[in-house]
Length: 288
Image (cartoon, rainbow, N blue to C red):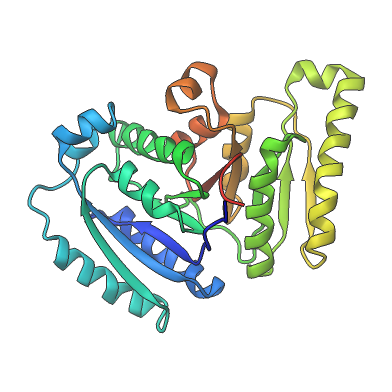
């Protein structure tokens, strides 16, 4: 079957301030990549959503009731015009589940971008659940945009979590493509658990596999500077700390689902709930 042409960046919008951050991030990326920007607003029916996406219903309680969808779209189009004048914009308003609508839009997208819906622990958990569900269903990378708690330096690298397996390949592809487009470096981070670090042969094997997997991208993107780190510790706090100094953190996912991820301690799912700053999940088996 022929792969659909991925000629657009999709951004989910609502009335929140974090949504505006996502729109700004997506608009600048669409301008840099020469892609169309599609603004998508879901008019959610929380009772229908309860059937389609169990566990997502609490997100509906965070949204103001009676939002004027067309006014929201018009205001967002005006904002995009200020951020990235001249880019091609289209809009889409559809009733239904945010995850379902955005997954459908992702079929022809280069990426889907979302912003957090407010602040506080409850909001963050809901945001992580919505993004996590989308990340394991979407056929393209999903970018969750939050503001960095501290300013990052100009020209900061794009960080990518790697493990030397095929799970990392889509994440590396996405990271190198963005780095090449923005003329910044890539920082590849392979976190070694303490038990692996103490096993000299296993640690050496994993380092070799990571170096080997990066070689293809080094050849394909000769102008992208690569730093490779092998810190020892827990992947989630280690990568979350790395994200605080990077333009974007990119991680891979096996795509087993949110519930499975929660039970298995999925690194990508945990990072979606905890990272401050933009994070992208590119799952294995997603877009080519």
